[in-house]
Length: 234
Image 1: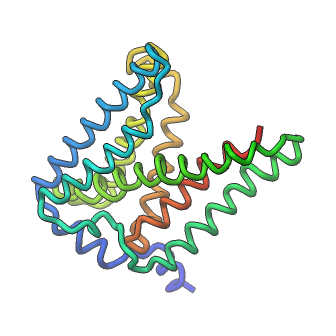
Image 2 (image 1 turned 45 degrees about the horizontal axis):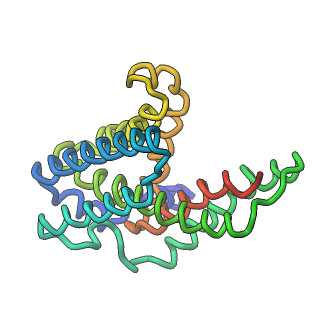
């Protein structure tokens, strides 16, 4: 029984080997990438506020591509971002089971009980593309595939590295919303503490799913289902 529990929480050996190989240069590049991410999101919020022009699709695709460029500049393989078919079957099954359970218990059952109506089919289909690809896939590449793994070049202690990137992931959501609200960072944080704490714990879960198979499919699928579920009903 104890061994089965250990297997659930065991990190894939390839994940450990990859993170152990990164240097200070990788960690510094990860921090630079994060800074670019924050600036892009803040500018995106300002543009939306001023012109009602949403650039989320273009910006997220661009940030994902930039992540790949950083990897190639370091002469590293794309699969170091956990984009591979390795253990893909297990990754897809686990991500799908968790995601469907999340949607069922967090969205479908409460919506049916409260008399909500299913969203328009075309909006749901667009949501599948938007939340799985533009949001989940882009964020998972950036934070679990790239920043979390490369930060080990600067922070060797595993628990500290996960906590630091968890905080970074929470704060990543601030610039866009802060620009929309027209408030400063401290005021926005003070009014959204609970939400930011929840985001931190979502990072812990997404990271756990990522490192279990060292495959981005698990956390991307679960992340996509989670975001899509909030938009299935009206």
